[in-house]
View 1 (cartoon, rainbow, N blue to C red):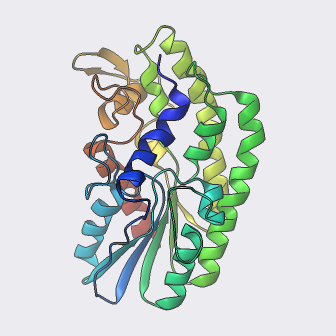
View 2: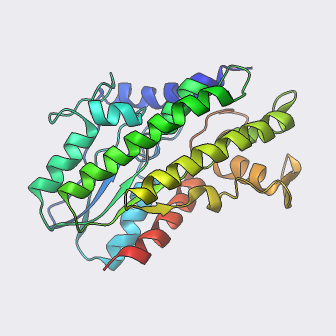
Length: 288
């Protein structure tokens, strides 16, 4: 079995290395912006392709541009980023003149007062997976108990900094889909692993929901969209047979179960659209 604990970060770092370690900011000349912070998901990572224009940020931007004429995108996301390195700027493959990804976002907000329509944030899973996923595919509960409060504190700090720089701008952060559900039927003992990991993954998403909610941000509940807790309902997946709906969604909407890119946790094109749909619904509820 591959060392799953390295897959989340290693695949993402490959992208940043190909890009010379400098995350690209994509913005036009218009006066209204969508500001995105995040990790490899925010820059649309796809295996063997690197950064794409089909990630959830890009899909969401194109949709919102139909509603907000002239909307431009400022994406400061960086593959492999953690909630810690987003604040400190210590990620070895991400370099920002301002110091860190959060510093870059705050500087952008200060430089464009009253010009940012909304902000999205996606970060934290790399911290959790990097620390708590063992090579067996099992998440360590004791590790989660230790790590999650620190992730929550950092998410609160990130949202507070953004809100202080742009008090009236809606901020939307996401919960996470659970790619480890794909272990079901993929490895020996995969069903038990998927169920055990799902219980700990629920703690991760509860941490995100609490952190964002308490800091005054809106939650895009991607976990609910992917139905991560639903082992009861089933669907038939070609080549896999009848699966619980949460497992099926993990296999259909990410690369984790694919023969060619097995255990790659990134969303595929369909998954990125599902994430964008979830953000869109959350943003519609808070736009003035």
